[in-house]
Amino acid sequence: MSLWWWLLARIVAALLAGLLAGLPFGHPAAGVALVASVVVARLLYLLRTTQRWLRGLSGAEAPEASGAWGELISLIARLQRRKQYHKRRLMRLLRELRRSTAAIPDGVVVLNPQGEILWFNRMAARLLHLRSRTDVGMRIENLMRQPEFIRYLRSGDYALPVLVTASVDADVWLQIHLVPYGDGQSLMLVRDVTRAQRLEAMRKDFVANASHELRSPLTVIAGYLETLGQDLDLDPALAAPIAEMRRQSTRMTGIIEDLLSLSRLEASGDAAERTPINVVSMLEHLRRDLVARLGQGASVQVEAASTAWLLGDEAQIHSAFANLVDNAAKYTPQGGAITLRWTSDTAGGHFSVQDTGIGIGPEHIPRLTERFYRVDPGRSRATGGSGLGLAIVKHVLQRHGATLEITSNEGRGSIFSCHFPDDRLVTESKLPQTRGAHD
Image (cartoon, rainbow, N blue to C red):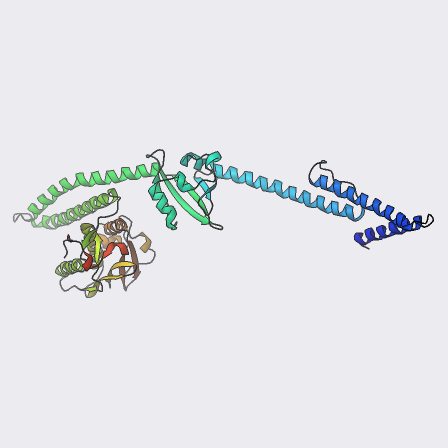
């Protein structure tokens, strides 16, 4: 028999006993009422002591009870012990989490879906000058007002981090990366990259200064080599070495010019100007120049499916397009074909160079825009390339808000595509009075 049936049986037995006790006095109902009052009083007493115990008013000891009520109190006590165990375990994990996040060298800020601060570690407090008493619950954009960060926060595209200066010290550079998680929450990671930025600035200054200083002596060397190469009395045995030196000096001059171009692009961090450029005309010029150099070596075609003009820096766009065209010419064999395309759609403008050259392995494509990276170093040096052309293309496109897409199959050729945003296009009917040179 279960405890609840046993309790019910005891109550019924007590009521029967009260009924029997009241019969001799002629008041059986009074006997039943008296017994019922005792039973209810006991139950009320047990309920009150249990309530006080649950509220913690009578210490940690559970009230003494037997039967079903005792089993109920025992179950509650067991649940309470389990709750306290999990609470202690959760507190240990929380303390461990706080210690581990405090040891992280990066700042960590937890944001809710509204961008309000829920929590941050010590490093975030130091880097962002946050105070736990006043800043928790504040919107992060009210505390960090750098325009770059505001644009990054509202863009919704957090694939790459953003670089900003600290709000208090402009000489301190911070890299901020937002990582969405959960139900609309975000984890904001903050890293001090001041040292790396200073080293990068030193590298850029060194490359720019060294390239500038090397240009003058190289010009002198090239001039003397050209004079020696034209000397009719020169020993025939020296003709080949001098010709090779002239070729190498020309190649080194090209490398220095490319390094200076890269330095200028890196120094100008703002968006490019918006001069109208007749892309179709520019492609025709590039085609004629390439045909003049290649002769009958390869077929060069222009496919212009759009008459839209491009708004940008004409010299930089010409440099980027020319680098892509030269790159295709270097790796397209005799009898191959090179196609220059210009199209536009709702997404923007698209320029591409397609060749039927040797192609590129998929493992090389992610690194093609690195400085001096070569798929085939021996062949690249033989063709006289500087290894900086695609790096220049990447920086030019970044200044114009554009992207570079590379697709290739080994032995079947490559396609280098430049995708420009829609706001960089303008129809010929809406052109301003001042136009670019290629019109």
